[in-house]
Length: 439
Image 1 (spheres, rainbow, N blue to C red):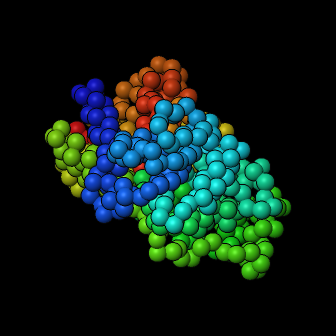
Image 2: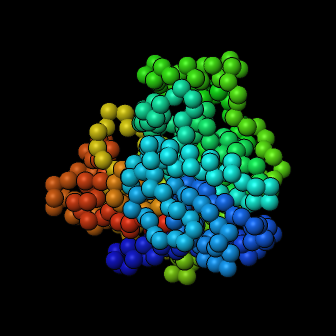
Image 3: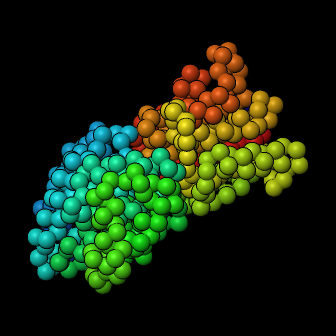
């Protein structure tokens, strides 16, 4: 029975990932949205962008415009190792896999995009392809700020447990392209941003730090983020000085509105993936409780809440009776503190569920949590799968669930038990999908 539920959990998760594949999403948009016709009619199509789904999005765009390839010119910043030969759009390796911070290669790609946009003629159309990871893949430090400064701030924010919204608020105010400034550089007829969202609620100003969207945040709010997490004193002096000058009105704010020729469309999201997962679970005979795509907060606390629902299902058959499938999306955070282990938020979620429920509570329960991009933290795994048999294997190896959880060391634990969810890069990114099966 355990084997069956593990197979079911993996199949349900695969359905969620398939729903976010760029080829399907791009084809649907170009065929159904009037902006697709405007793109096709342009004498010159400038393609820019950044993100983990960049290769698939660029390939899908070229395939859809196969009869107009000679009109296309473009560059898209992507992670290393995901290249594929394209006819007119260059995939620029902007950072190594597993590295979620700006690099010199990313800066070079962003500079080339700015040059391409400023070359636009009055009838040209620009298409910007944005997806998860776009913020780190599209760096262009503001004047007076070095790449080392931006990297240092990025590391501080990641370790602090800051939310993606908070991190992007700071990054936008240290950039020449984020906060709407990339779209501002374009002088052509129409600028269309096509977005696969990796952010809770799909806010245009937060996805990839909003390079093509108005920004409601301010320099003052960016400073407040650093203060909130006690990071101000350890922030590089150039960054502090830049943000303080902006807060005093000595530097121009990020854009609060954009020209009427700029359009942004979210073509893929966590919500669409959860819908596909729910359908796949129902087809396998599970009663489904979809808890939505707005799940945030500390990973262990979310796991504690879900463990309570599992107990209620098993004992009281509420809020639904077995066989049950709980689905939740969103993106939680892990505050490392003094922990020095290796893992990611999805691996920690599964480990925390195991710790909370224990061997008796995991009987008939399978928990899968995975990043839809195929990456979970600085590891080669998308996440992990856990069930009652995980305890048996751990005991045979002398591994303690509680000890590894205390050290935020989920990766070595699941690597040893054989429970890592290794998929390789999926070519898309719509946050996380968590599946809990109770039979």
